[in-house]
Image 1: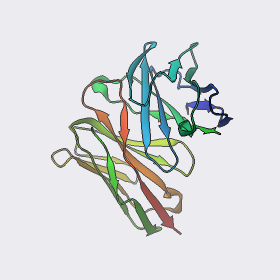
Image 2: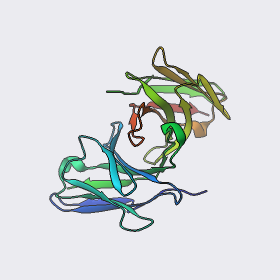
Image 3: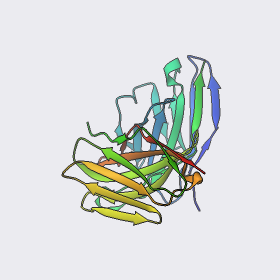
Image 4: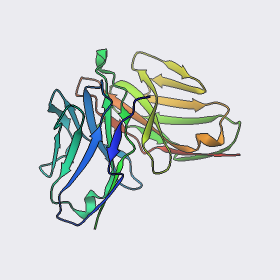
Length: 116
Length: 113
């Protein structure tokens, strides 16, 4: 069964460094997403991406963050100048485009980002 | 803002019993989805119910949606130890906004063998 994959599974970085989190969405999906989950808190939407551009972003997704689909398979989240509060589990998800706007999203296993 | 809130926050039952989790939200939705998360792992999609549907079944799962009360419930029948996980409801926006989901805090289900 096709699945979303993410690398690395765990990333440790120092405050102020840049990190790139990578995702390979399910191949026939056209919508891609990033969410994050701070330990013990709810899953929060960061950004959605369709047709090579951002569809929607949350207030969390400020200039520190960027997304890119550098080729036909990868989808990346870049965090510039990381802060301690960026420590979280980052989930990538993808979905098909369905009529009526009903998107079942399939999540990857997550990348645990630890900023020290 | 639309928001799924689950209750109870934690539920502990014996294997074979049914587990019911509830979710409430604040604004109009296009759909509501339930996800499972095993400790420290990714989210697994369980079921999607559209705003014009009232009930949906998938195996041992039964989901109801009451849009007048802005609430949904997830029933797991004949629970198993393997059902132990956190369960989240997530609401999909009414208008096509790229399909973002708003998640609730989740219910932690513990099924004791």
